[in-house]
Length: 139
Image (cartoon, rainbow, N blue to C red; front, side, top):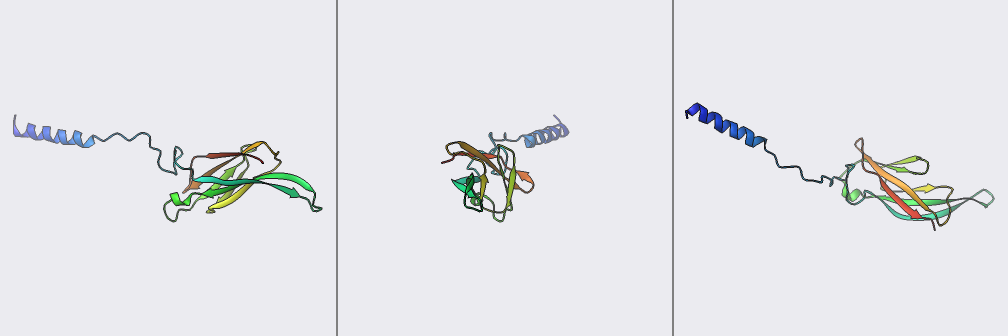
């Protein structure tokens, strides 16, 4: 084998060897800002309670269920700006909270003993995280 053919074979082996990559580990779900993240929820419900809404005469006009949320900013890189989005799955209504790590969202027209849910997700740098659904029985 001549010198030129040997050089060509070595170059070819290096070229193909450089293209060999290890497979991507499966599953890739540890980034909390990805839709397929499976770790600790970034938005948690810390408590729920009910409140009676009174009219000007002190008469009850509605009962609401209040979800108290906590954003797990301890899981973020420092100085991460975000927008929390809550959605009532009954009617699709949304409320947003800019960089608030604690906030509350209420559901009106509720009945004691029934289960109610609230959805929450974050928007970070124009992309949204997965949706976390939190449900509780109104007591």
